[in-house]
Image (cartoon, rainbow, N blue to C red; front, side, top):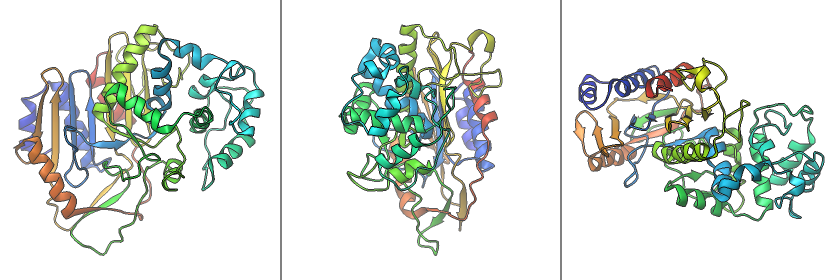
Length: 416
């Protein structure tokens, strides 16, 4: 972080917030990622290059590819909003006694469900269905992918095996119940006052910070303007590439949103779990991850005291959230660790910072000097047109392990 920005922000926020900003900017200088946002119940902060994101009206922070945060924020959130205090009974009810088993369900899925009388929604939400850990699903129809997943060798012990495939199958169960995807996303955004978007449901390009290695170049250049795709996750990318009315929606990835969207969701989760007085007993509980040791990326100060009271999730692109329902405390970190930035030509693209005080509702912007939101918006418009972010397909995917960064940010942002 440039010295003038350090001086400006050091007087505007507590030490833990300022140190978190410095830590993340130091990692940007190491090319670990190019943009970041974080939040707790008191502050929200973000930083990005001016050509990486066009800020929307009244949305002061950049949009990120949320990767596996899609799992709790999309289908699981829909189940919670729909069934409220009956949610836990609903997801624990065996399919043999569930209205979700319908005639329109694929035969292979129907047979899979009928093969185990204990199988329920939570079997998939909490990764206990016995499905294999991962598979490239390829350019196939939803039915072909479903048949492929269910025809392969399964884990007969039904131990916890983290798998994206669980959330692909959950999406097929939703479709078999004649629930429209537009209805699912609208219900979430309407109830939470959020603006989440899904790569497979958006017909227009989602404006987010890059989630791929790119060259930052001014004006025309000789580099080919190749499209990386609509999401970083390989399968979510393919599923969103078929075009209108043909895209496949999956529950494992493809959701986009900004840090404020996550705040709304996390506050809902915290209230929901507090009201239900739920504690975790296994690593995965109702689709949420939990800290398993004092070294957890949740950044837990008092592990033995709080290990059964913390819920959250990680995303491969460098995203995470953790919450402690008992105290309503939380912390969120969004990065694009799957992106690397290479400058071509003069490096005159400005860095933009945003700091928001949640309690006073004050928000501060900085880019070489103090700015208003309108001024920052004009800067992003100028540089989005002047500088191009072009996929650098020659960069080998060698993403930095940011576990220590996640943990330190957590330790900085709460005292749980």
